[in-house]
Length: 255
Image 1 (tube, rainbow, N blue to C red):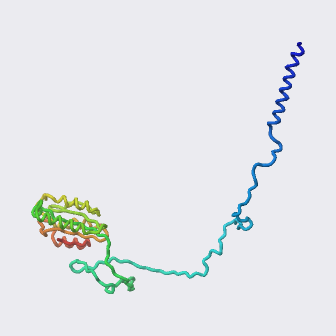
Image 2 (image 1 turned 90 degrees about the horizontal axis):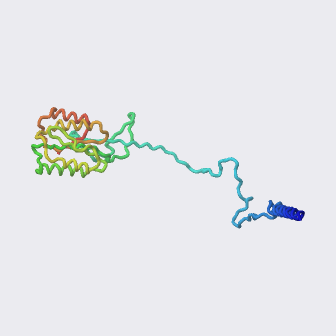
Image 3 (image 1 turned 60 degrees about the horizontal axis):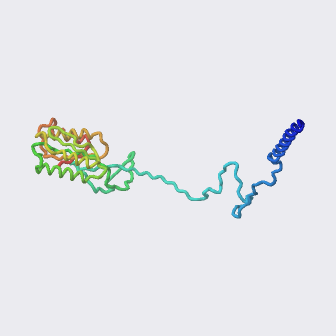
């Protein structure tokens, strides 16, 4: 009995060990996998033959077939110089409509051909100088209304690129609106012309001060003066004012 009890567990152990070895061989790597899963790629009917395709160059070289060939080429030099010219009379008024034959341009004492003459449309910088003294300008008076109509009528007629400043003067000038292309700022500045503070009107001092402020501005510039023409007690005279305007090269007009 003791021998049987010992032999049976040993036989069972040998049987389990044999089963494990057999199962391990079945689950191990397969030496002969057989046919591969991937299939050979077949060319489609639209695919060109590789023998007919051009070879890939190993180094870039310029293809001589891309040259233009014997095509006519043209070369020309055109030099056109534009000159800004202002022709005025003895009173400083512009003279328009002058034909091109009346102009003569020299370069190193050599006459140059004048192609055409046209009226310029360059932007302008204008300082509007408005007399606003208590002697003539009173709130809701006819001269007050006339001044506003003239000032706003002129501002509305300007081009959009023209700069305009509003300067009122009595005893001394006051800038109501600096140079701007915004017409709403101009209109707001004119609305400030309500109640004058002084009865004096120093016109010559105001004109000279405006000319000095505009002396550093390049391009076309002018001073528009809305005035009665009366000067109370300016520090400078009419002759000095005129000389100052001539030296500043500023166009002027008065209403």
